[in-house]
Length: 283
Picture (tube, rainbow, N blue to C red):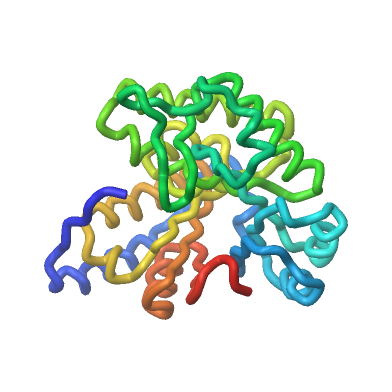
């Protein structure tokens, strides 16, 4: 995520007025309707479920889960009243905790900078290279195993934002990674035409490469103060509104701060908002 440039406080009123104007004049001209178009409520939960939690999950329009913990029977129970279920897929990083998947990777599947893999200590994971045809196949097989075979409606593609964040200073590598992503998304759609996809972050990658393939994009950290006073964030709001209008990609926002203000700002832009006061491992 880029560094923030703060806007003067006095611009707040004019910004909110602009949002209202956008809302009045908004027209959906997209050629497709996302399966997320009529979603109102959603929740993210990444821990193992209990029977009581599964029962409560069926009350949401969308649940985003870690499918590693679920059986196909549990997924069917969540979906019984029409809940759409999306499973977490770490798209641009390889987690060392996921031993079965990690052991399938070859050296060519990791992104190398200055002769070294890029390591994220906080997550104990490595940056991957989506241009690798072997990695594309491994991850397509992972989607088959964790998403399709268990009967989920779609995949939540986390860490796609790494493409913008890690490669933004190298246009040639950035272009190659975006092409690699679209090659992989094409593979997924060829195998599973009805599989729904939500991308996490990577707003420029969405606008330039992935929007024809995904039904939604998530903006984690959508906090009122961070957005309304920030020029870069305002540009992203405008960009996402345009992609929604032209390609039918729904925008899902998540806040951990300022629940009322953040939700108001999100819904004013016709985004879909969810506030998580703790973390995704607590129900």
